[in-house]
Amino acid sequence: MPGGGRLSDLWAAYRARMARRALLWRSFRSRHRLAPVSVHEKAIRAAPILCFAVVRIEAARLPWWLDHHRALGVGHFLVVDNGSTDGTRDVLDAPDISVWRTDAVYREARFGLDWASWLLMRHGHGKWCLTLDADELLVYPHHDRAGLSALTAELDRRGQPALGALMLDLYPRGPLGAGDYRPGTDPVQTIPWFDTAYRARRVGPRRKLWVQGGVRDRAFFAETPERAPTLNKLPLVRWNRRFAYDNSTHTALPPRLNMAYPGPPGLLDEPDALSGVLLHTKFLPEIVGKSAIEKSRGQHFHDPTLFHGYYDAITGAPDLWHPGAQRYCDWRQLVDLGLMSAAGWQPPEG
Image 1 (cartoon, rainbow, N blue to C red):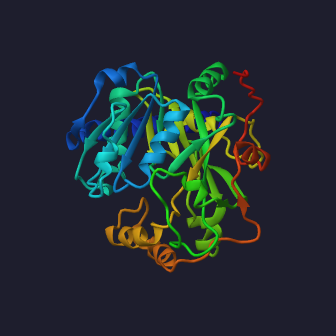
Image 2 (tube, rainbow, N blue to C red; image 1 turned 90 degrees about the vertical axis):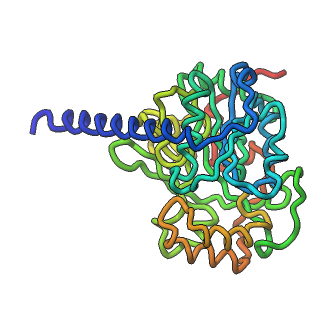
Image 3 (cartoon, rainbow, N blue to C red; image 1 turned 45 degrees about the vertical axis):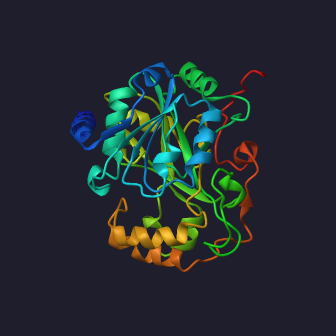
C-alpha cells in the first residue's frame, strides 16, 4: 500500500528508540552495583581517549593489554573488577586506571555490559571511547606510527562515528593448553596463527552486521554454522550519553552507528570504511582450564546449555592448526589479506 514502506521505517525507528531508552535505564540502575576502589576523576576528565573494560581473573593478560593500549594512546582506563581472586586488583593499581568492583552476577548485568554502559554514560560523553575485553588487542592501519589521537582525528575528518573491527581468533600450533605464557609478554608470540575465511550479512531493520567464520566456525561449529560466534565489533566510538551497546559491542543504538563498519572489505556490497582488527587471545594455554570453569558458571552470552559441547571440545585440547593457517606478522598483512581496511588513509610521517 502507498506509504507502507515509510510507516514501516518509522515503526522500526520508534522501536529502536524505545529499546535504546530501556538499555540506558538498565545501565543507570546498575550504578548501585559498582563500588569505587580507586577512581581518579580529574585524570578521567583530562584524558581525551578512554578505555572501558569489565574483567574477572585476568592478572596474566592485563600487563601486556594495558601496555599495548597505553602505547596506542589510551589516556585512562576505567575497569570493573567482577570478583577477581587472582591478583587482578594489584595489576590495576596505577594512576592511569580507575577501578570499580562488584560481586553481582555477570549474566544478570547483560554480561557486564550494564556496568560498562553506566561508566560510558557517566564519563565518556563527547570523548572517543574504546570498549574492550581483556583478551582483545586493538590494531589498525599504521598503528605502529599513528596513535589513537591521529586515528580519531581522521575518523572525525571523515565524519565516521565509530571504528569497526574484526575479532580475529589467534591459536597455537599444537594442542590447546600446551606450552606456557609469561605475564607481561606479547601473547601473539604464543598463539600467532589465524584463519582467513569469513562471511557477512546485514540483519533486520536496524541493519545489524553479522560476521562469522574463522577458526571457531571451522573447528567447533562446522555442522551448525548459524551458531558460530559473531566476530564484528564496534570497539571505538565517539560516545554520546544517549548511545547504547545492544549486543556486547557487536551492535549499537542508534542503528546508524552499525553502518560505520561494513565488515572485512568486499564481503558486502557497501562502501569501504577505515577499520581495524581485535587480536583475540582467548586461546592462550589457560583456555583449557578456564573452559571447564566457564561451563560450570553458565555465564555465556547466549543460552549456556547450547555451548556445553563447545566447552567440552576445548577441554579436550584439540590442535586447531591447519595447512591454510596464517602466521600473524603485522597490520600490513591484515590489510593485504582483506581483514581490515586503511580506506586510503595515509597519516603524515613523523
